[in-house]
Length: 101
Image (cartoon, rainbow, N blue to C red; front, side):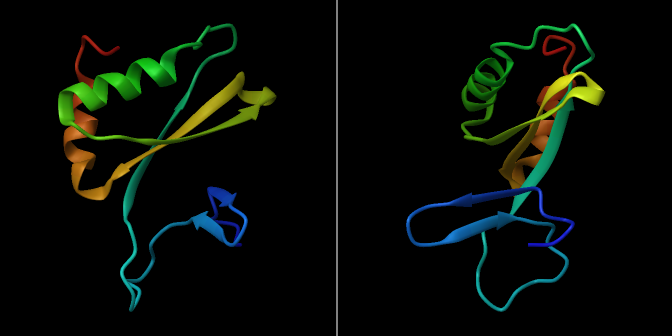
């Protein structure tokens, strides 16, 4: 694990880390584009993850990876989202639509 590690998960046999791709590795790896949402103090974001994940699935046919964290100094819960790297432009476009905000 490094200072750049965003997330770590484990099953019974192995560890996986979500880290920046700084060089193309010799073996195939799944590439994700990652973006995040931080909500201001006092904003109720309950249901947001489910709503946006469903919206992206319906619009683009893609699933997402969501890792949630907590930082009380910045208002509480924040989310890191991952989607297939080649869909980043489309996902960004959908998120920026006025109807999504």
